[in-house]
Length: 93
Image 1 (cartoon, helix red, strand yellow):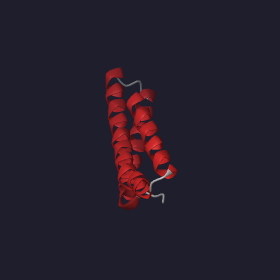
Image 2 (tube, rainbow, N blue to C red; image 1 turned 60 degrees about the vertical axis):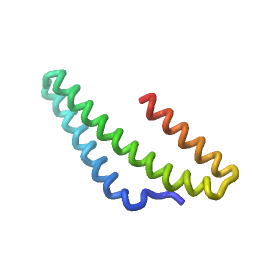
Image 3 (cartoon, helix red, strand yellow; image 1 turned 90 degrees about the horizontal axis):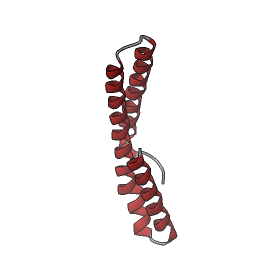
Image 4 (cartoon, rainbow, N blue to C red; image 1 turned 45 degrees about the horizontal axis):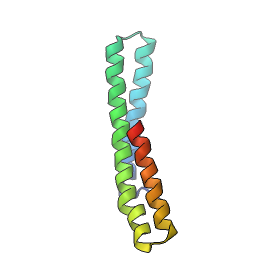
């Protein structure tokens, strides 16, 4: 079963804030703001996206992977593989 459970509204709120941060970054670059200030704001937006990623990963492990493991079989192996690949992508970013 897919879905974000009770955290969906929180994820959407966080993503809207990130969207606002990115628009602010665009304005900063357009206004030729000091490079270090722009980099600081990029770091903040990156951390916000990482927080969303970790929340989604946590929910995925607790629900999707746990349910698949309880059922066993190929579905469980697939969910674990997907989670491992997602973690690898997050670590690389």
